[in-house]
Amino acid sequence: MMISLCPYGTHRVLKPKGALPQAARRIDNRLPMQANEMLISVETLNVDSASFTQIREACGADKDKMAAMILDIVNTRGKLQNPVTGSGGMLLGRVKDVGPDFPGKARVGDQVATLVSLSLTPLVIRRIKAIDLQTDQVDVEGEAILFASGIFARIPQDMDRKLALSALDVAGAPAQTHLLVQPGDSVLVLGASGKSGVLCCVQARLDVGARGRVIGLCHDPREAEELRALDACDVILMADARDPMDVYRRVLAANGGRKVDVAINVVNIPDTEMATILPVRDGGIAYFFSMATNFAKAALGAEGVASNARMLIGNGYTPGHAEFTLDLIRNHPGLSALFLSRYGGKE
Image (cartoon, rainbow, N blue to C red):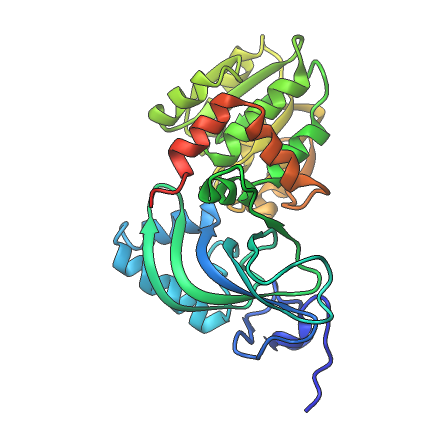
């Protein structure tokens, strides 16, 4: 039977018919590679932070239970899409085959990282080799399919491959920070000491300039000290982002009694919507990059406190975001050292 190929991968959607792969409950991960697809031999999954945190907590940090849960998700859905958070992550691997109609310049043997979510990527896992609780990375033996619309980046030769994978996973966050933040702005970053948080803080520092102000909100004391060493934040606050009134009071005190121009949410836990919205001035920007965000809570909560903040949904894609973020790390020795220490390959 002839298959009508779609650049967005709808030819692999099993349930419900008519859906795009990300919204689908199940996709076909067994169908042979098609003419407009690329086949990748998968080495490492970089699981989305919100998803990994949920899996770890649900399994009590038991790696065997986590592996079983990940395998069950993939076997059920044909992709790694956490049914609780809806998010996935991205992967590192080598190009195994390239269809004749696949766009771009991919060659067999290239080491690549996908820049589209695992929540839409057909994936087969034959074996889980290791789970790193600190980096959210899972080493596997398996294969994945990239659709014609899927974007990817070759792993740079001058950078540790797992460091690059971690950076590319959140490359959209600092790239969009650069688009949103203006010179002289006051910027609040919630989840400031995490992977995307440190990138956003460093980029915000560059963008606000000498007249601006960067406030980092953290929960992990050890990570907060690592952030402090980067000298990117004017103030670092230790608080629980699930307590919006406490965050609101602390931020105003740190910003001379004024609300901030931009708040960037990169936390990996739920119920932080109002801690993001409350400290933002009327007409300012509340940017939700976190996949733990409940957008109904954000919209209705903003209405309930008469907030006129402009709320934006984080998009992991920005044109040129991969090279932008890798260059940010290359050009900041402290950031490079921190990423290598946290996320670099340990083999």
